[in-house]
Image 1 (cartoon, helix red, strand yellow):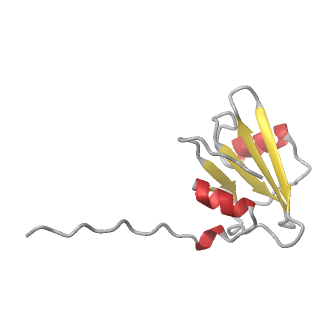
Image 2 (cartoon, one colour):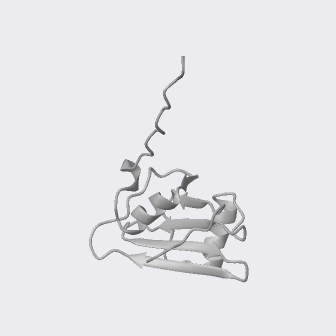
Image 3 (tube, helix red, strand yellow):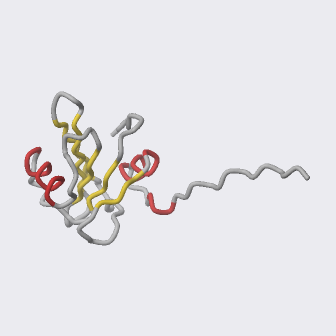
Length: 118
């Protein structure tokens, strides 16, 4: 599953498990009521069910809502603690999460320091 994230697009991860039977309208309602975000903002919203092996992504592309889904054959998607909030992910973390890799272990290296002139 390839999800290209346009510059300026934020990726929100809903921390609370969601009923995976929900479709466009049900997930848009979760975005609006639980995450307190606008589902038509053009940002991506990721959801996972209780079992952890199924992921849904809700995204508004300017002409309508898009719904992407992925099911892992083995394992679970790595998810944060259950709270009524959303985390923001980087595009790199999104790519790792979609592949079933632990995205929390990635850290951005510090930029190299330039030598100071005396």
